[in-house]
Length: 205
Image 1: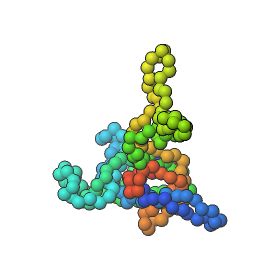
Image 2: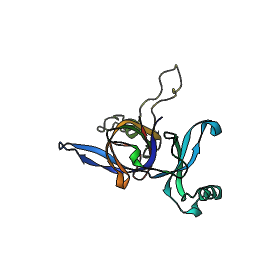
Image 3: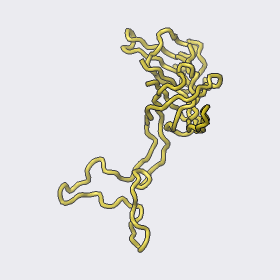
Image 4: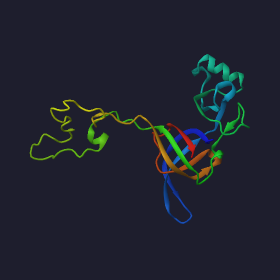
């Protein structure tokens, strides 16, 4: 079973190793997440934890969710999501924090990438564009998109202008460089998807 936890992306920085090398890392606040519901194979058909993350005013929740959390003596939460059950000893109301991870572990990080709006082919796909000089009138345009009389249509999947980013993206095989347990902060090598303060999911390989 895979260990996983939700958190927030704080931003990028550097971590200096003992040998003096600088490693680019992303600081992530992982947890604490509260187990709101424990799903079992017998009752739900699969085994999972439903986690609550980020404190919220009770007035901002729907009445059924607020009543359910109150019944379980859990503070109101803003974000709810499920992860695979990785420890049967944990029960509803227990907190999970970044200590479930260990340094040098390989993880996958999932988040919603930065949105760039409606973008052209140069920004979206890295096209080279046309010449700028001598009045070519062809600078950042995509160019011809058809083939010939046959097939007489634009094939599906053609690289065109359109919405760029704002998609669910998973970056794989990143390394946990450092864990600051007292602050619930984990330094993960490289870049992870999303803007600052966006919700991310970290899963151990």
